[in-house]
Length: 356
Image 1 (cartoon, rainbow, N blue to C red):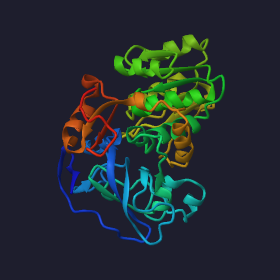
Image 2: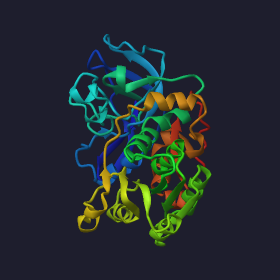
Image 3: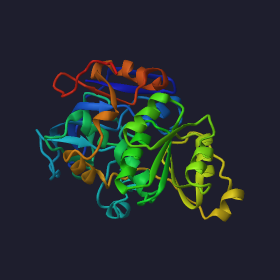
Image 4: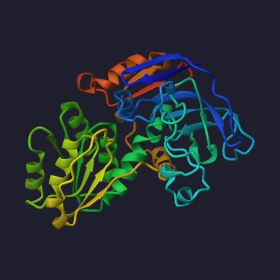
């Protein structure tokens, strides 16, 4: 089969790789019908995630069909259409028993496309299948479902829930990429007074408006002042950092009100300065975290009921064999207008045009 292989910082290719095989009785092998590219994959290609070894197939989000299942798998069987979660969970360790699957102690957590071969391939082996793949309702398309593998659970859990969004809040989302846009959409489920999106790309700010942001601001044009103007000089109740660079993190800490919350979602490749000399007296709470995907079943039910704006985030589709072109389009989002890029093949319910 073929997969998208990381060969070291700045080097990757769509090439022949060995077919995955069951290794444990709790594994499944899934034929990949739809897959997407994450901003974290770009961080890997830049060398920001050094634990990814050269030779690893990238990708941690997919939809597909189970083609083989180990003898201890109970929740799915061959022929089932499933969502492959970005997080693998053993279900037995202390963290998994608490629903904190991202910190699984039994070789779980974020492993696909990170510590083992991932989903950007024609087939993928998924360990601990009972908690790591989810049967899909027929009403949710592949292109919609694949957005529930990572970006929506990440935005919802690490941004909205950890940020403690409440009715009447002012919520600022810094970074209107796919995860930031999902944070805009899921924050609105809690009836905030307003959601403000901050980014440098006009197309992404327009997308944020379409998803319910009441105001938008260019990162380069003192967005702190807009936030202060809209809140009577108080600041935002919740600020979600969805970029992953030191400058945007510091911007978030300047926007938050006394007693407010900063939820850091972005993957940081460099240290960020924490200005405790300013923050200590403001009772500011700062949260971080890897997604646990405990919310995936809830989000799947909401998707089946038409309560999540999934299709609106997909701007480009490609067949699997055009993976390298898809990476190029996604990595140049400022020029291409790419939000979420989805890849599939002839069996898939995608329109594989490669255009936005």
